[in-house]
Length: 266
Image (cartoon, rainbow, N blue to C red):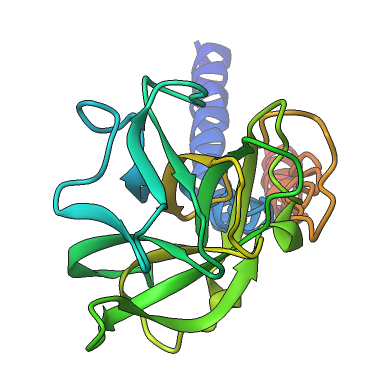
């Protein structure tokens, strides 16, 4: 009978010691591992920026045309021709813009009825294609209307060839103009201008499609390397090694001491 009681007491003692070990050890483990998610999260590479933007012209709208309140005009008119519903060639959707300039430095204005805040965007993207080889143009941001009825160019104009090359005649090419390079000095604009740098005269149209301000540069349509300044390369994420928390040695020492004392004083 006495031996049975001893066995029962021994089982109770071991059980109590096990519970005591858990009570002491678990808080130590939780305190060590608590910072693990934050450390692992901080080590992850930043996610790429979003692609939210404002489309000026493209297939996002019914009829594949301008955003509501936006329109087009040229500075000098005359023999210049604008076709906002051109059907051939088209990059996406059913229409593109066809612009045939005949006057030197003439500019195709794409403008809105109210100012647009571009502070949330990083790129002005558009797809271009030439009706003939060698067509040169530059793009500028536009401010308010001046006395002559045209919107005032603001900041620094950027050339097509400086950001990818002269529009090819056999395919579409995407142009991504970094907004900061325009150095507009303001975040409120009224539109964009596409200026002829060919000296006017007898020339074929240039075709423009899918024009948008965006937080990201549009995707290239072909694997052909850029001729001009490349876009900013996306950094390769650094591999994250498996996380092994530095658990305190007391997690093992405390239970060992308790078990040793239990055996020694039994």
